Amino acid sequence: LEHVSCLPDLIEFYIFIHKTFRHVVTREESFNMNLRDVMDERLLRARFGAVHASHLYSLFLRVVEKVNLFLTANENRVNFECEDVALPFTDLMEVSLIQVLSEAEHPSSGHDSLFLVISDLLMRYN
Image (cartoon, rainbow, N blue to C red; front, side):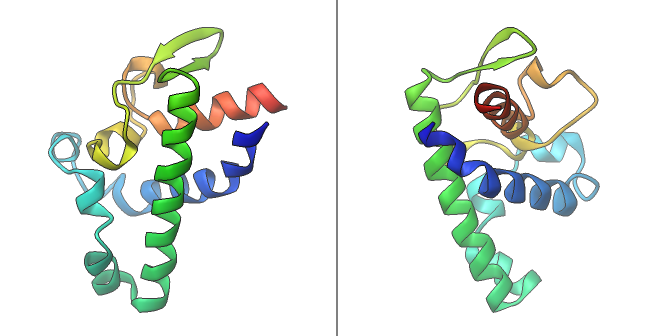
């Protein structure tokens, strides 16, 4: 039950990432963009202003911490539609942008990791 408290932050971050990047970068570009670099506080400040950037960066750090704790507790696995899915990373800070974006493929195909974590938490504690 300890992980369910991270849902508001996860959902807010998921919405931000998709609103900001989904239609701005190509699929190929997103493979080469590191989430840590995309969420650089200086870049956020230049694009969104100091107050909003501070909020986004704090949100990002909380999400990384909470997702990493969830992954550790669950041996980097989530359950999606009765399927056990191994997530291909141990630290959300180090993933490429494609790992957290939705694309036309099935969510369990190796991308859209935040959605998989959110879905698992919702099903587990609903």
